[in-house]
Amino acid sequence: MVMLAPYAALMLFCGFIPLLVSIREVANPSWINLEGSYTTLFRILKDFRVVPDLKHALFLLAVFVPFTMVAVLAVSLLLDSTPVRGNTLMRLIFILPGIASGGISIMVWMFFLGRHITWDGGNVQWLIAGIAFSSGAGSWIVIQYGSLRSIPHEVIEAARVDGCNRLQLALQIKIPMIARYIGYMAILLTAGAIQIYAEPALLTGWGLTSNWWSLNQVAYSYAFQTADFAGGTALSLDMLLPSVIIGIIFVVRTDFLKRDSYQ
Amino acid sequence: MMRNYEKRNAVLIKLTLWALTILVFLPFLWLLKEAGPNYLVSIKYLSLDQNGIVMVWLKNSAFFTLAALFISVLSSITAGFVLAILKVPLRRFMLFVTLITMLIPITAMAMPLYVLIDKIHLNDNIWGLIIASSYYPFGTFLSYLYFVSALAGDLVGMGRIDGLGDWGLYWHLGIPLSKALWSIVIFFSFLSLWNSYQLPKVLLNDPAHSTLPMGLELLYGNSTAIVGVLMMLPIILLYLLSQRSIERGIFSGAVKG
Image: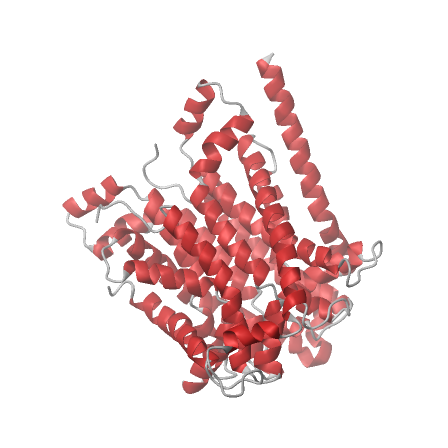
């Protein structure tokens, strides 16, 4: 138990207690619920900004999440399938957009593509999805490539002897064997799409988005611009719900939290 | 015939990967060009610009990142090992809270964290930010997944027969067999701390206490590109250092097959 103490203390102080404080905070009086109660969780959804922002989140869930998952898996599988000279350099270059800070990513995208495309309210969601994809995909490629490299060589050889080609190997052997990590990626990408903040916030500085393009920006504006922390927290907890549901389905339907009994 | 088909596919895969690589790299070539041909002169100029405030942000970022990195990596990997291998009370609960706190928006956590940090009188203090940023559930989950799937049960059982206690198991089995995991957790923790933006913005007020990503939004034009390049260098260096481990497989353990 001593080994777990530093993490448990950090989890308590920086995770669990703030989470409880947030849940309790929702019941405090808010600009949208002056008497204060947990109905704020529902009332906040009537804010005029929520519906358009929900549409943006749904767009990201429909475009950014599946595209990132497919692209990450495709590139990781390609990297793993054939020995390529410069493999290390390739992964370094794929991760470059992710290691650049948000401000730099925006600048690169704006100057590199901005000259050829006019971004406005109608198409800026594609720019945001593109920036989010380029910032996140490289890191996931590193993780998924690593998980693919851990598949025992004997398993791959046995499948090859049985006549599997590269595609069959990928679909029937490799993907099922790293399913747990793919699920982990799905949960975090879903949460990332619903809670997107940095990309639209930075684009506000370029005059391309309002300061309430995403749900997280609205929550932030409640909490830190109108000093209505109850409202901001209520919206944050509403945003958490879909990710938690997906997380619970994932935990229940896979062996995510199970382990062998060998202690 | 089959061999030719395989060879042709391999060439196609290589060409596809190189085409993608070039596509991703092109914007960064532009960034390097934009940062100016003479980086050293530019950086020297930048260090003097605005009374050297950029260098103050750089020092703040370096100190904050290294201190929080030390705490977050040690605590998260050890926790991942314990939760995967040892019998501990509330194990599933801790894993679930780890997962939930990883998913909760920073907006919901920032204000309670601000209040808690203020209560221990570390508001607008780099140590407050270090404490608030040292909780690293992503690393704990990655470590948990590694140890639960790659550290073979027989090996742990044999360690127990040889008289190893909990610390012994971690010291003699957990750490030596997870070098690749350490590399990857260090890399991703460093990446997230070095680029951390939202939490420092909430917890730090004085511009002299700012970190580089916060300061970046105050700079415009050529300076932004130079600071951008400057910020990427330590991450690239760390990535190259961790490559050998990543190449071997993040999750590869002691026993295969």
